[in-house]
Every structure is written in C-alpha cells, then in structure tokens.
Amino acid sequence: MNSVKAFAPATVANVSCGFDIFGFAIQEPGDTVELFKRDEPGIVITDITGDEGRLPRQAEKNSVTVVMLALLKHLGISDLGCEVVLRKNMPLGSGMVSSAASAVAGVVAMNELLGNPLSRKELLPFAMEGERIASGSAHADNVGPSLLGGFVVIRSYNPLDIFTIPVPDDLYCTLVHPDIEINTKDARFILRNEVSLKNTIAQMGNVAGLVAGLMKADYDLISRSMVDVIIEPVRSILIPEFKEVKQAAISNGALGCSISGAGPSMFALSRGMENAQNAGKAMQERFASAGIESAVHVSGINQGGAVVLQ
Ligand code: HSE
Image 1 (cartoon, rainbow, N blue to C red):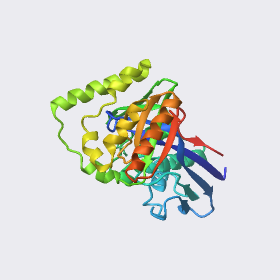
Image 2: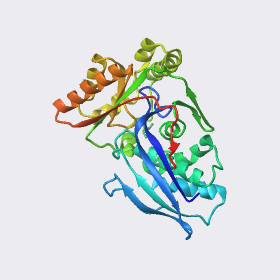
Image 3: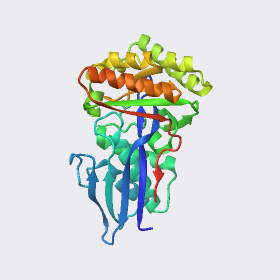
C-alpha cells in the first residue's frame, strides 16, 4: 500500500455534566488525512488546508504528525518515509474539537498504512498525546468518540478504562458554532480546582441519570440530567448570549443544551431530527439577534467513528 486516506468526525465532549468523561461523535464535519509513502525516511507535512496557515508545518510540532511519530516509535519503525496532507473542515478553537479529529485521522491512517498492527482501542493513547500537544491535557473525551464512535464514557484515566453505552436511535444532536474562538487551554485554565460537596453530589446524580436515561431511552430522564453545576457556570461567561441561546434550544424542542467541549460551540440533544432542526434554527436566530453569525450541524450519533476512505 502506497497511500491511505482517513476521515475522523467532530465530537461533542463533556455532554453537559460529564466533564472529561463523556463524549460522542457526530456524522459531519470532520478532518481528513492523506498519507503518501516516499523513498526518503521521515514524516513531512506537504499541505494543510482549512487552517488559515495557523497550524505548525513541522512534524514534531503538529498534533497530526506527533501521534504518527509516537506510533512509529512504539512499533520500533525508524525508516518509514511519508508525506502528509491534512484537510481541516472545521474551525480551530470551535469546541468541535478540530485538533482531536486531525490526530485521530492521522493515527488511523498511519496504522492502516502499516497494515493495522494495532486495534482501534490500542490507538487511543497515541491520539491522546495529540490532545496534550493541542490543549496541554491528554483527555480522551474527544479522541475516544472520534476514534471509536458511539457515546463514550471514560470511567478512569489511570489506568485508562473507556467504554461505550447504547443510545436511542432517534437521539439527534444539534451543534451550533458561533463565529467566535475560545482556546481550550484558556478554557481549562479558568476552571476552579476545588468543588463543593453539594455540587459534587448534584453532578454525580446527573451523570448517573444521563447514563441511565440514554441506556433506557428515557427522554425525560435525559432531559432532567443534562445539568452541569460545575463547569458550565464558569465557562458560559466566555460565550455571548449563552443563557438566551440555551433557552431558545429548550423552548424549541431540545431535551437539553450546554457547551460543546470547551466552547464556544453549543450543542443540544433532541428526540427526533425535526426537534433538533427546530432547536438549531432557534439557536442560530438568537445568536444572529446579537450580531453573531453561526453554523448549524444536525446529526445522529456517529456509531462508527473514524473511517479509512481508500
Ligand atoms: N473535556 C475537554 C474540556 C474537552 O472541556 O476541556 C475539550 O477538549
């Protein structure tokens, strides 16, 4: 095999109450990585589109190639020559976790080029290294779902214990990306390190409720559990019109609404595509009334995760 192309989807991390432990992938958008073997050893980035020239072109600094280098090192391969083309289809700093999709597409493409020595789950620690480069923290709630698909729960980081749970077929996500940018590192820096016992109890109840609601297809329980008393109150101040946009989603059919990842994108979950579309329209209109343009994506939960395209 001389060339490979892989696609990895955007994700919604945290899913309201599950900071760093919940995430799911959507169908589109996503990033694509193409690899072309070359005779001379070494990994070289030959083209990146969709980043407005902002991402590093050196292989040791870009998360898409850092994950490949880590994989090659792990496998003891030092003589591979490869050109990398990255096509980014979502904005940087959007809360749709563009860095994760690139890293996942990169590591999946490289694994395929090598004849798939590792399983999807075994690729996860390498993809997480990409997150460390991009945001300063090796969390898995984006790379996990982008790599594996489904609704992902990270029970533990040390040791890594990650699994997926079933979700109802007619659960739809509305993802609204306002035309503003938030750096994930900054959005993590502003969080408090201490949490009160009262808020811990409330958050644990909602985490348990959301898992049970999704697994039992209990939409009322899903709706009641989409409450984040720890992270959302702090981060929402970075998103203009947050409260109004959230209310617009819920008033127009959504079960709940919160920040996607570190923001500024906001997501809503709804029963059925029509509710998800109505919520998206209302959210977009609310942003527009404050002079903020936004892009809306409505999608079911992506059960497959990243795919090899050729
Ligand atoms: N769990 C992460 C955060 C997702 O909220 O900071 C963003 O990468």
